Length: 198
Image (cartoon, rainbow, N blue to C red; front, side, top):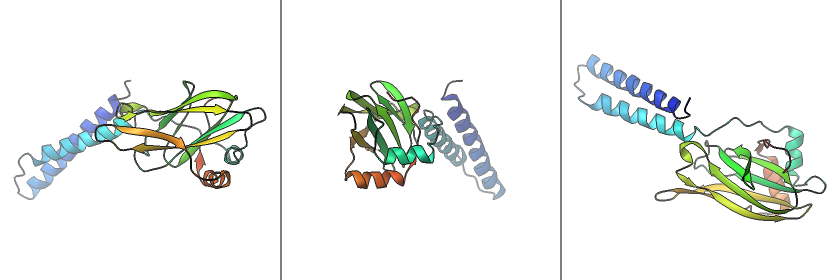
């Protein structure tokens, strides 16, 4: 089934139900509401379908266990590896899952207030963040260039910047000291990466 079919069906149901209820209540009160029931139902249906279509790219991600979360929050990569950590902040599109990829290979999807971490081989990497579903075409993706040595741990903050026509995903090195970042991550939930170390 097309991922937009469900939002369209639910939006149509909302349109019919809201139009009927407002028309019924107006009729019961003896008030002629004219086009108000249909226009209100149309607005409610379109709004519902739009929100659901924006979330159509969301997928269920496994929550990391306490031990994995504590290890990632310590910012200590496995021996011979580097660690790439991304966390989301901000209220814009916080319910929409942000897809994260390293060197073109998706490794996690995170929502607002969560983080993920992946162990990587030392060297040059490209980190990309963007949305799926209808939110994808409405937001520019972000890319960060990483050059990592064994033992390095980098933390990036992902936010969404509002634009006049199109929003932009922003990936930037997280501000703060290593201890501050570690403490911040310990207070957040962690989404487990979908892949083994890259």
